[in-house]
Length: 462
Image (cartoon, rainbow, N blue to C red; front, top):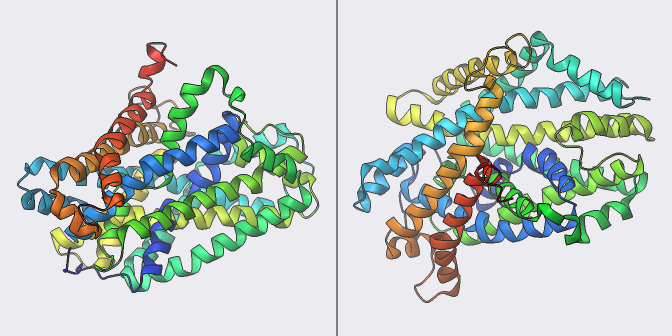
């Protein structure tokens, strides 16, 4: 078990790590993507498949990523360089660290733009602009925001400055202090939204839709639903992008990786389920479509808030909730590259955070311009935002997750993984984890990758 400490600092307690890692995992993917994906695949059946995928795929890989981070105690690149040397493996494994860094930079560049949308909608909700809104007006409001590069730039800049401010202050004074405030606030806001949905929405319909599986709803799309659930379980836990690895490097040597990973997975899943309970009753009460896709948050819900009692107030709460979720995820994406600059180039943390933030901010400008004035500029047939999203979600993250599983399960010595996980050779928990990380998780991630790049559809397999 690693007895060293990170030069960047350490979490002051187990709770701090759990809040930080949960904050990294909980993001727009839980509150935005999960509800509309569940809606597209019939609700309850998808939710059940998703829960199984979290347990069989997400949890074992999360344990492995935390384990690698704590054993290396450095940025993802330097951690993988050190661990490969310890295990007598080829230096090529540091590519895993590079993929995590690149993924985090690319994701944060467009994630910041989308987070800016949520900040803009806080003020739209507070200004009563949702009142009496219909589908055409909701679409026009969103289109006007996306078409305005100056407004997008302003929100993108504010959000990136918020991230840099937190990360520049360090592990204890920045990351830990932020998550100790933001995560409890996020849960309080989410519970308040669920209570509101129970009072003002069709809560029984929402409960039935989410927790009464009807596999007949999947129909011919059963295979696609399973693959989508696998992908959602993988991505919602923030795996393969270096964030969980760097957070694991700040974890106390005595803390149980298995117990902590389980708590994080449960809390992350709980947020996704609560988000569904906050959104679907409101959607059903207004006779709207639960499977309306990515527009569910920015076009469908504003219509509902505009027609419900107290809709302006709770619309503000909902979009503030989204901002908090985005913020806790974004700081975890910025941390790995800042740690790398501090370790490898000797930068101060403040300088590293500012320079990293500026670089990502510039990439974000390319992303936001691709939505309007640069809409005709494409690379491989995609605008910058769509390209960064495609490359990270469909290539870098699945490959990163696959490499984590292969290194932890096949390269790392049994004695080393047992030592770091604190589990004995005869432990049922260890044997189950090793089975999942060596066989189940790699196969599942390969299937996610093939589904993401459209290979199954190309050959008519789903």
